[in-house]
Length: 265
Image 1 (cartoon, rainbow, N blue to C red):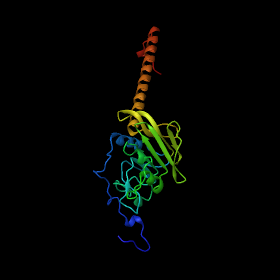
Image 2: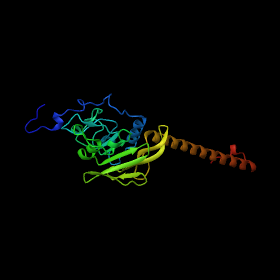
Image 3: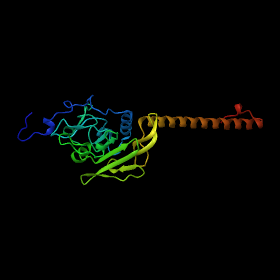
Image 4: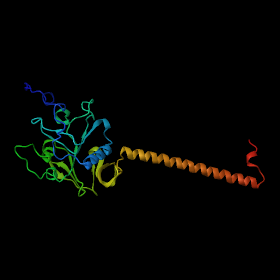
């Protein structure tokens, strides 16, 4: 499509997510099980108190198209979150990819899970080949200017978080492996626990009180446990009342009175 004078906006003339590639079976580095579970835990616990669920979108292993000059170029973050957009594409459809010139809002945070074959690029230690697209680090830092970039190495449990400071990523200081992010009223850090039957260190979100945000399954378990405890408490109270009544009846009998035939007022 030819450009006009005055120029038409990219959203009108560039391909939409329906025209762009959303997956490539021949692409190397298919996700392992950890790359499925860890992003799911991040998604389930990402609940900013200052945004409704309708104003959030999170993507896992989803093509991120970032440059209208080269509309076929994309990166595929392990997990990312966007603030202030509908969780549905144009409020009506599930996304096949995330297309910057269509959405109009860049991701706020990106998480990459290190793999032996991607570590150097994820940490900005590779140089761009002039005949190839820019590296992840260059795209996140210089093109999209993502405010927070998180890199987690599950083999060493090393967590690195970079913040955009004067247009360059700088490592942020963590407090006992955690970082509070004021803009979303959430913190992120390493949690040692059992998720989906696997005990290890996981990356997850916590609230302003320092409590780890619960997954739907954890909330349901907590609710059921509360109900069980409440039922036990009621049962205990009833048993205590029964024992009191039995002692009173025994006392009345010791006085020669029949507790079953006492006069009523």
